[in-house]
Length: 278
Length: 291
Image (cartoon, rainbow over all chains, first blue to last red):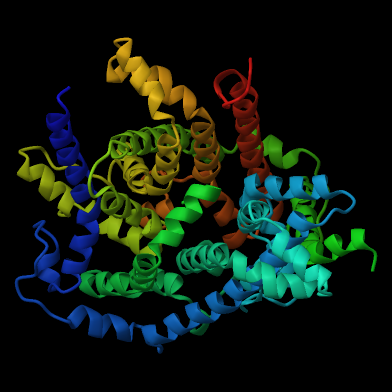
């Protein structure tokens, strides 16, 4: 095929696919400013009579709380979870990548096995465990497993990353009398920073989107994160108040979108090096 | 502390988590699947009763299993084929490739969120933009959520829409292929189609394999899509096994029975993963591997 003709075809195809991909999202944003009567029956993006009604009334919700409360709850879940993930996964990856110890192969094998293990098979006993610990309707079931390096994918990704970093600097630090923890904090962590940022970004994104975890463990509305609040608003909003739900949908995806566009380099690198679900 | 124990000390959070949140629950769920545990009374051993019921009298299970298999075998190949196709086109030296890559990746970032599942309910509604587009093209509008076959397709389309991360992995693999192979093939008169089938595909089989396993494990655990978009209906046509497990475990608190369903699902995933691993010896090609 002639190269320039081929390229025209390729661009046409890519642009067509891109438009089909992004049209629903663009429609969502446009429709969130529409009046309820305008949402169905046409495929146009621009609202005829733009209104903030959906945002104002949707933000108030039909509960005693505003969406601000639900965003705050999401933040309260995400922040400790992400910090716990970064610290524990860095420690564990450092252990795997830099030390020899008994049963190392088997232990690393469990990382791979956990990576492939479907959560569905451990969920019920975990629930019973958290119930017996009195942790139901708290954020602990969402924080603690991650703070104990439970997300095997991140451990795996950091180990791969560490193995590719030369050890010269660390050895120099050890010669100068630094112990292994000092070496980790002052030498390894700065070098690991790009990978740790990817870990935090993915954890932020996944936790923001997580629905099943909060659905199982959080029962009081005042502790709902945005994902549950959005589901609640579908169930409780009168059936024709569509723009409220669309407006709140826009708000709940906004943090993830902003973070993605600010840091997309880290995402693409993270997936290309480690391979990722999603 | 002895040098060889330092490593284990760094691993201690992981080992604790592995035991408490993975290994013990893993064993416990197998045990529970042989009991009638319902959170109220202590579990009674009932042997294979749960499994017997699943495979003999439980018609919901049979329906749900069939729907789950249909969903996975429909969604995973479609998604991977589409991801590979787009990655292949992007791999030609085109200007603005990063822009396209970003645009195609955005749905993957958002796809798991509830907001997108909500959006899906709107765009596939009777008067939604999909039907409006079909009308615009002179086609009949489709009753997406009223018809059992179509309802499952909306969820498949949602997950195919999120082809971005599989595509990025494919693209990275395609970019690492030595260009001289194509030049040599072209000199020998190979058409682009031949090069794709006989050079590209064999060289990226490890990545195809990786994507296949990951997408399959994920597909079998699909929950958010059917839970929000179709609530498992109509006529349980989108009632995937994870929904059934959720209802049994967390609505009816039949922990024993739900564990048995979870174990059947786990065994299906494991058997298919092992089949993939075993067969991969025949079809996955690793560079430098002399056979």
